[in-house]
Length: 319
Image (cartoon, rainbow, N blue to C red; front, side, top):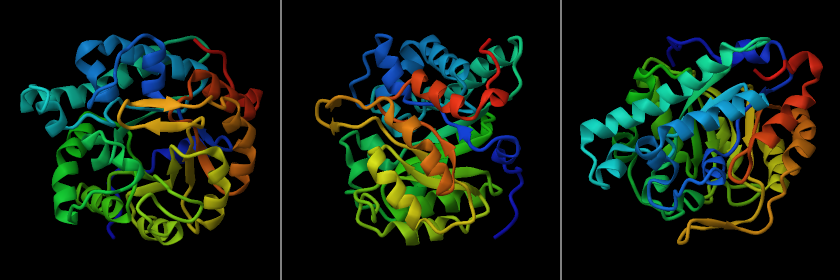
């Protein structure tokens, strides 16, 4: 495979600390601030209804200590936005604006006194199942060819890369076929750097039943992939999966805070375990995790707790 045109953006961060702190749940924090996002666009609805709120959430994660913030594009796709009556041209502008909002939040953070780190902006790429908005990213129960998956993901990747994100975050990917389709696109785009984070069903398999270890082994061969791992899973499932991951690349983990997701009503059920991620982070680090954060039902307090684990030398005062 060809060498990437863009250097690994994680390398400078990981050269100075044990692990990089990824932000937490964007939708969770939007809802906590009063946003109504329980429809097919989820957090992407705020791109046109209240973009300032997205920027404010990014700022809160940066102030809490995030090294990486992810754009509000997980569920923002051209077909998904046009389905809501938005023109294709405007849909492209909205997807690109998700990167701009994160970059603006970073610029404001960097203008503060005492800032000693430059956070990264990751362009979020959700799976095809997120577009369906029926919870199928947790099952992988959709039947598309690799060619069809590439056609679906191509525009959003191009828009986010063109908008200047530092890397791509391929999130909650339920099948190896979809992961490989996205990686092929990234390779064709000059080897643009990305992480691939799988959705899983058990301690051994992806959401669609594919064995986890071979899936990791497959995608980690790409020069585009700078980290590989799992997200939006219970914390108890993380360590067994990391133990099965044989890769020379950094591992990335960002679990949810527990509970069950109702894909029909688009709500989480059960009491969140907000302290579990920071409580397990050192163990995950010992198993190779080099990027650690939170997913659904987590917020800036989880980010701050992870930042504290890095010690005072890696915890400058918030601006």
